[in-house]
Image (tube, rainbow, N blue to C red):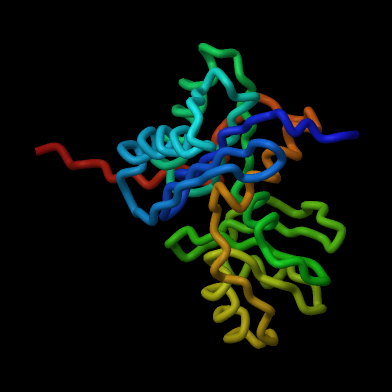
Length: 229
């Protein structure tokens, strides 16, 4: 199947500790923006989208010129995921554009260095557990996605070595080593960045295999209930 290089896909992520936007056009990332932030995604996202449109070859382009919008759906911060999906739908619905949802597991796996053997994508939860999904060497996802503790992950790992990928990889590897397992190969600095996974969004669009995305939550949000006085 030949790729449609005329397509333009707006891609963004607000699910983690950064906000990133990219425009895929003419078979490549035409322009992008990236900013590290732990909060404030809702204020930053739309201006960053506008900046990307302004950067595109110095030409006027707007949402109406797009073929699709792609956004990460989690797991990640609950607020960030909601911001990303709500913005994607708000931009797409009036123009009847398809919205492509990409899990954080898929985009982190896509961005990881290509090495032999099985991989475990490990995303930080900032609790005692981890968000994980296993991928075989043939790139097929298996056993997941799940929210598991280090002990639970240990019982599911194959005996042979496995590569850990994602911002939770280093913490998990430390726990595994302390329990007697040999150190794993680590790529712990891989986090979702729109310009890095825009090609994946393009391939997903070309495949035609996508549906209206829903947020991927692997556990309920942490809610503090105030006691009545």
